[in-house]
Image (tube, rainbow, N blue to C red):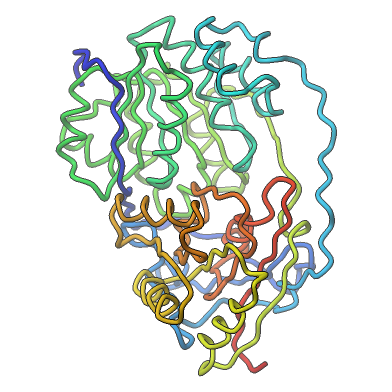
Length: 442
């Protein structure tokens, strides 16, 4: 990348690719689970030690259910999906140490923050922004909806204003999340002369290469596409002075571990590394230990979604699974629904069948390009369709308000996937319901 100024922020989008590796998924033992864990899964392993629902290049599972039943699902106790008396979400009072105006930030950046209605930092912003401003490595344990994106963007933008030669790499697990990060970056840095390029799969790589040869302060991408661009010499890791791993646990789940290691190992050790994850499994902890230098850890965990969302099972026979779904959706209570399936082709098929049955639906999965996925998401957000049928690519990086129901039409492959799925409803102070289809009679 050279440093010629192109005069405008660059925004590219698409879907990242992933590569097979021997990363092992966590397994769950039913016997040791209790009801609050929302799912006692035990993932089956193949001869290579990988879970039998591994991921392909688009981050979607290679095996999955279809209209009548599909793959053999993980062993679990159905009662784990029942929580008909959810606990009302109680937000513990947090006493802020700062207001945004108190931070030592550029005045123009403060103006942009104020224009976006931000006055009081969220807990993670309040605690982590000063640490990043002090150029420390950080570990932020935070879920979506906690304000973590602004928590790392604001101090990085301030550092970039002070040193326009600074180049930051932000890695995200999905194209949707990468695009969302870039959108927030452009909003916060408006008028500050800061430029960025989004590097994700699912789109022509040539415009991204062209953009990378212009002036950039931020490169935001999925690991697979970033690796492709490194191999083409369009991205030179040695030029980065900071790197952000956003939703690191999800990148590991999607099989990006080798790409992450390869990319970060080529960035100078003097870098500042910011690490964000919703969970801290042994695998995530190992990665953080490899790449961070004396990090400061900040944990902001919201109440477990499994306790605050009403959950139940829907029993069906293999022959009437689709009819059971249509019958459910005839209830006007189902206003805005995300339906999760495991296979790209079955998700697409289900969406078309719902439309034929008079239920307006869109689909999002790895076989759709960026434009198609953004259009489907836009139609769902604007209530032009009632249902969004999706693979697990929608479990993270896609945030839609007022989702009334999440339906697991095909079973998730792990407890973490289940939690991420149902977390699309009941966001903030909203109430939500999650239903899981289970074969075995009604």
